[in-house]
Length: 581
Image (cartoon, rainbow, N blue to C red):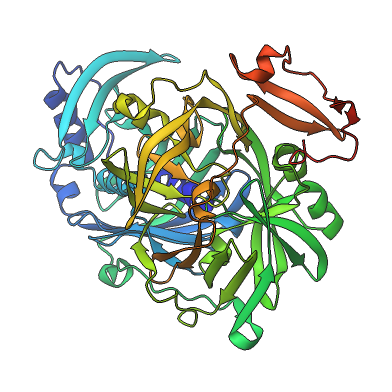
């Protein structure tokens, strides 16, 4: 989550070098862009081969400062933020798109969204759309007038990137707005307060708003053309993380496996224990009431999304210590939202928060599903079992992404211990490959519940799923029908969850970017499947029907959304959890 915000923030402070000119009308895309190039200062623009900027930034209410270096000839750039939870950096070093979190941990983003974001940032930083040799495909769209200002609209597609729309003021010929869609997020950035830097003009003020309502505002306070030490700042930095330790170098803690979710106990600021889920698809989250009990100082107001259509307001706070067995992480940022009112109502067990990327990136982590235990070890000290299938992964933002095959169709899948199902096949992949959806798949209904509310889809059997050297057949799968939220992501085929991972002992080594799979005693066991067609949540201790999927036993029995289930076979449901029901 934090990385996706930083990518948006990086784009928000990207610079376009332009200067004021006189009103004119252009009939072709070349006319529009040539006038913009002339307005830049022409030769003056060409003399700017690198740019350094610094200034202030506000990200969803969290304030701080930024520094950015851009090499306009090689497309390399690096930016660093000092802004609470959003502190860190990101950039492109000529080979990799990289990210750095607030702790100093650095990783390469190998997901498509990350690469597209880096390509776009470089393209805009350097004004490549003004250079015929670097502009890619450009098309002049119909003029538009907004609030009395007429704009020439250029749709530009960077080489290797995605289309974006540049709004150029038809009077000043200065870019005033950029609209971009990468994956499931659309951003609109406005550019203003142009000032001269060595004869070229850059917009000192930029404001970005996402389609979820998040705002990012940057104000450059100083800029320097062709700084002498630019090369030293453009390399990917090394990780410098010193916030994690384990007494004895290794700790083993018990876990509960509930509806294929991994639950464990943690300590926060020496208090607890609190009940958390361990989610490779997530980051540090803590329930609002727990944050209040701990007296945490909160900041920010971000709209965060998940599997559902909606967003939820998230604030942030720093927790001095996170304890898991004898492992300790110091000064960890947590997102704060009503976990108990969200995950807990559908998860079948009380839940106070989540841990994920921050813990996994500090340790080698072993999920022993059959043995009901979790092992954390310092990096390089907990090797997988001999003969384990070692699968390399890349980071898609902060989530592991591995090669996979769905019904022999090669694709990429995310690794999500926070999902209860075997695999969720994402909407676009199902649309592009309709043969993977079985003809007897169920009607659309609620398949899951998380941040953003319920996730809709169908249920059926995937003929085969290959991960590494393992091929599973006749896999019960969710086929997403979402057009918003994570399952609408166009860059991922499937989200592989606990219904698969519970068949293995899984060792994650984030430092080496590998996961190791060893089949366990449950590898060939049939997995139970709820055939009622009902999706239940808990409200005030009472199980309530959130959805009754059409043409299923639950719906045929007359149950409908909102019905409370008070007895089963004449026995009261009082005191039963959702798993027992």
